[in-house]
Length: 225
Image (cartoon, rainbow, N blue to C red; front, side):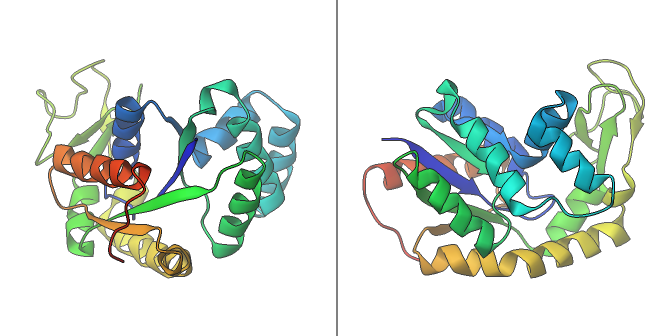
């Protein structure tokens, strides 16, 4: 039976890294909503053109377009065993749409790991983050600095800090995330599918905790809310 995971976590908690780690460890496909949009727009699919028509006008892409993209991706053979969803759903309405979509694949969301951390930790992490201009390799000036200051170890390109990783912007991003995601967290907690993971642990410890949740869920066991 297919396993479907919705991975939640605020900016700076390492959700993308953990999604990649889980995909490597479980064989499940990591589906990032951002990547899905970029892929469809780049390939000029019908859905991509439709999404871009809203984005070009500064409007939000309607839920039905996003759901259709997710459905199309889940229908591919490599998702037969399930998937790790990252960035979708964002609201209870989208969560209900996802549940209906997965019913068509004879499945449903199995569990929802919520990687969380104190906002002060997240602000520090993001404020120390620098990215290479060529390939987007990520460095942390304190915990994972480049060998040569200001240069990527892998391709030698310049490192830069995104505007939205600066302290003031980061604080607002985390606040907005908490406000927007609170109803979705409550939705999945009400279904006893939400499992909170301590995101302040080292990367490998967070991965181990996530794998433990997945194995427990696949074994049909329950966990505390």
